[in-house]
Every structure is written in structure tokens, then in C-alpha cells.
Image (cartoon, rainbow, N blue to C red; front, side, top):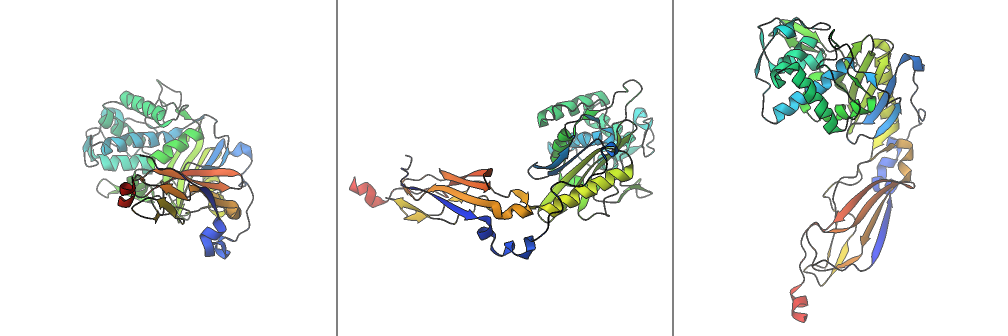
Amino acid sequence: MRSTWWMWCSFVLSVGSLLGGLMRPAFAFEEHGRVPQLPASQNFAAVLLQDAETGQVLFAKNSQKIWPQASLTKMMLGLVVFEEIEEGNIALRTPVKISQRASRTRGRTIGLRSGEVFPLEELLQAVLVTSANDAAVAVAEHVCGSVSKCVQRMNDRAQELGMKRAQYRTVNGMPTKRNPVPDMAPADDIAILARALLRHPQVLMWTSQQSMPFRNGRQRLPNTNRLVGRTNGVDGLKTGFTRKARFNLVTTAQRGSLRLIAIVFGGKTSTIRFRIAKDLLEWGFTNFTRLQLIEGGAPLWVEIRVENGSMSAFQPVAAATAAPLVRKGEIAAVSVVLQIPTQVSAPVLRHQVLGEIVVRRGKQTLAVIPALSPGDIPQARWAHARR
């Protein structure tokens, strides 16, 4: 039986009140511009900066422009492999025998020889950290059965993720004589891929290293992402280069509770792509903060009275976490509105929706979260007897 809702009330709380002391100098700052400063447009093709947790785009320019991916393609290969591992179909310790095709791969390679055997883990690390084309072919052949089957898997996965305009033709971003057309995608789609790949913790464990051991430590393979170890918080993700693509980069950094992803397509030089990405990250961390307003499952700061119930009142709980990303200069404009009844009639069911928690910035709604009852509240015995 559903409860009868009596009086409704909106409880409004400014974030300044909710955060208390955090509104003092810890959040005081001067904005460094409403948009980041970028070099002249001929120096790059597209850029995008987003919040890794929610996908919220903080800044974008030409992010829908379809562009050659070069070795960013290896990110999708990595995702396919990690999902196979997650499903129990393969393991990182699985031995992989190098084929003749893999050993003959051109471009950036690590000198794999036909007949050699390596653990899948070492080859996948080489793919993601040092961008080895030969390792990518070896991994694709072992995991999917062939390069062509792996390319199909990559395209299927792209569609499932909502990467509607991504098109893969290789497993490593290196066009072949038979198929010279490059792998293509807009920055919007690659941002989706980056967030999916980051759900696998092993990725950042590898890409946060400035180099990796290979051949039982006889070789050290360098990380192609020069921001790792040089820019605060940067711990991934992938570089790419061909003459058509010029210099591409997807990089990520975490500072405190905030993780950002920066994407640069078509940098005129390698130095320019790294500089743009670093500037985007610095601008994002300087100008935005995550407000940890409400924890999912935590009791709210009001009580609802219960008529004819086994208990007289209770505190509703939030169905999900509210942690919006906002400009630091707009914190004072953020408010939390509880649209809930002041009283309900028993019985009340566990997780029954009682109303809504609305997070707003000025007139803009940032989040709407259901307010729930924390448990069952049956009718009081005397209420039954009175019937």
C-alpha cells in the first residue's frame, strides 16, 4: 500500500552554507579566462577537455571534426583485450607466439621476431606505453584469431559505446599498402573511448611509468607520452603520429578528486601537442572543482513525520551521489533543493521514492536525484486496532 503524501515543502540550501568553511580562501581565486589560451588554429586540428568521471565537456574546439587517428587506434585494441580478460577468456599471463606477419610490421616497432614467445601482459604494455605496432598485430592475432577479425570487433565495440563516426581499418593505426585509408574518428568519439579504457585500472598502472622493462629487463621501452613524470598528476594515456594525422594525443591527469582528459588532434609538432594538452589540463584544474554535495545512500538533513507508523519520523536518503563539476567562481550560485513531503502516512516501503533532490546553478539544473525512504515503516499496531 502506498503512503498518502500530506504537506509538501521545498528545502533550499545554498552551497555556501552546505560547504561551510570551504567557502573561505580555499576557493578564492581569479579566473584565468573563460576559455583556455590556444596557439593559432593552423597549429592543431581539434581539442577537447572533459571530466573523466561524468564525461562533462569543459572545453572543445572542432571536436566533431573527423580526423586520422594514427596510434590512438591502439586504445580501442587495448579496450577489446581488457574486456576479454575481464570475461575470463584470456589472461595477462597467457603466452603469445609472434607470427611472421607481426614480425614484418612497419612503423614504430620493438623488433619482435617470428617464433618468439612473450606473455600477453608484456606485449599489451608495449602497445599502450611505447606504441609498438608489431606488438599490436601479435596481440590482435592471439586475442581475436586474426587482424581482420580484431578490426571487426573494434568497430562493433565502437558502435556499442556510441562512437557513431569512428571507423577502424587497422589494429595499430598504421595504414597498409593494401588499405591506405587511415582509421578515422572525431575527438568526441575518442573521449568516449578514453573514459571506457580508464575503467580498467591496469591501464594507468602501465601508462604512468616513464619506461617499461622488456625481454627480461634487457630492454627499456620509453613511454611516448612526454607529459608523464613532467606535469603534475599526468598518468596516461596515448600518443599517435602519421604524416596525415600529424601529432595526436590523449592524456589524463588527476589532482585530488578531479580527473580530466585532454585530447589534441593534428598538432603541427610533437612539442605543440604536449604544450596544448598541458595548458588545457592546467586551465581545467585552475577553473573547475568537483563539489561533493551529497553521498548516495547518506541521510539528508531533514526529517519526515510518519502518521500512524511504527516510528514517528525518519530521515530520507539520496538515491545517488551529487558531485557536480562547476567553475570555482560559480560555487556561490549552486543550491540544493529538497522537494519532499513534510509528512507521509504508513506504511512506507524501503526505497520508496518520496521526492527529489534538485541541484541547480542559478536557473540551470545540474542534477535531479530521487529521495528515498531508508527502510520499511509498517503501520503501528494501535492503528490496526483502531480499524
